[in-house]
Image (cartoon, rainbow, N blue to C red; front, side, top):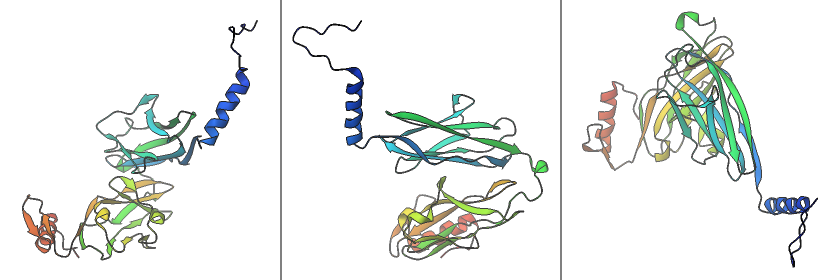
Length: 259
């Protein structure tokens, strides 16, 4: 039997009340989480790197969490890097370990209106177990110093069968040229071309070769963007004119690939 309303009170039926709350939430534009980028199955090399990318949209903005075998990931070799806009994160595992890291990794996106899940499998192989056609990095990016507003090109060439697809990471987050208004392009050769270099382009770059046999990362390389007449902090902590800074950085890295 339904409870009697208190004297002077009017009871609001539950279902219409919930519907009303739903209309109010809708009026404010709230929405359940929806994935816009899900992690993909990967086969990596022992001692190498694996990165799983997970992004979701919704209002309030969803919170991304990562799980392995039902537990939140936690290890010195596991790092979660958040996107600047807070729309997701990357789970990076380095260095990979055979058996230890082989698992299903689950990404969960949660906000006040709901929760969604997706997952991807990681396989890890020793060098002697690699199948024919596993990607190789024939030429990876090198340390580069470029003057602000000039063009910087980070080189990458890869082999494999089938021909691997090349992608780029900067500071452990994927590079998306489509968001740069044409300023950043990935060339047909696989190289990353950055026009009108800005300070925000400075960072650590990796090229990644992926095909049906697996995924291989290049060694990382730093890109420095310097002003034409500024003073910069050298790796030894001494302030130097920008040109001397260029020579110092290149000499320390043992490379002549400097702008």
